[in-house]
Length: 567
Image (cartoon, rainbow, N blue to C red; front, side, top):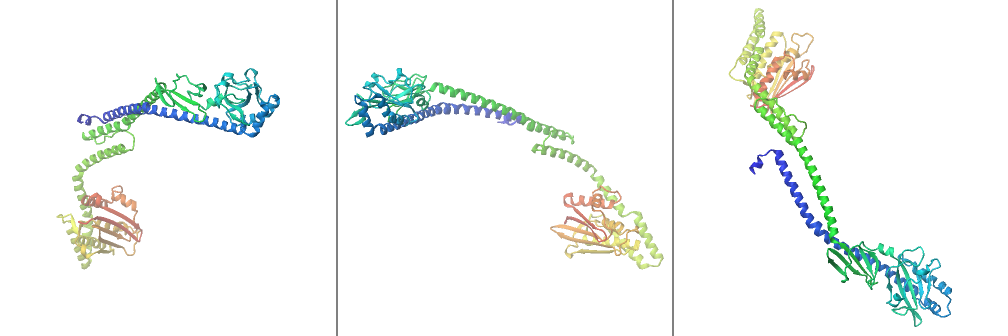
């Protein structure tokens, strides 16, 4: 199994397909041998038996019906009286013919199998037919003297030409009648009259199965035809001899015998030929399907897998931009895109690792530079000096104290984190300095539950956003923006192990999309503090753990919401 396991996928698929094809062909051959040959022979014999019995029953029913009708027509007292007149020596032939018209007509129309009927006066040699029938004189007797002498009651004789013009061969159904004790009866010998129903041989043959023969009790063929050798009479039932199957069935009423023949060899050869063609067609169709399957498998599965393998090897060598070039968006297409993204991600991560230290240092320096610009310090110190010179010692003292507290937090390099209450104190110091510098009266409100005052967060997160509110929301240096009572509020709360910070103001507001673009580094370079603070949050808490949302209603409420995990 190991050599097979190590083969390429296309080789494994072809081998398994070949095994399936061979198994299918073997199963087909076994099925043919057991079902088509053995099962078909049994089915053929049973079908021949059923057809023979059905045909025989149909013919026998018609003969019984004709006989019943004959008795009802010729077995009456009226016909007995007519028979007395017909048999008298002084009877008139024309009158006799007229007398018999009704009986002959009724018998001729009693069954679709009867073409017509006639009556033969044995003693006088006269034949009585329907007026409508045109008789051929050379055939008028229909039945020969030798046949009359051998009649044994109701008899069905071999086919012969019809005595009536315009009709094909007929099968005589003979009813010999003798006047006995004042009535008419069917007799076995010395009949006075013979009533003959001329049965259509064509219609009888139409009721017979193919390759079958209908014989009377004397062994004479009544109807049917077969090209197969006829067997010797061996009684009713099934018989097989020299590859020929026959089934004999004696009709219970008429005593006729129907024999059906089937050449097992020819039929089985036909079945074999048909089955062989079917098998070959099935194999050809299967091979075509396998070929199509192989082509599609190679095109849509193995080739893409091969290209994916090449792309992965290229990525192993350091070519992270390598891609598997094939179409499709199925599972392989998703794997292709995933490998491509993986290569790009690896490349970016390697570049990010190289730049991480530089970015970290630069980010920290930019933040400190932004917060400790000489301009901010000089303006603050100059403002303090002016307050001292004007004798406003209280204001100068307050600003000096605020600046001292502000610098204590900025210059505390020992830790990146700070408690919530110290962060609030830091922002209060910053707002006092800004109020003193610009003669503003910005109100600062904060809300924090006592139990979370000592929770820690990343240091100096709030100042860039508060500074943005003062500069751009309240318009420091921009007389076009006027807010009657500027207010900044900060709320701290813990929800589901996450710290939520909401920074709000009632300034002129901002464009939410532009703010987010600036925060993600896609906007103006003039908002370095917001961008750097966001980068510090991502670095400290992890990108997947930081959520920032903004909303702005100008001159009413603009809010920045920051969510980070509780440390």
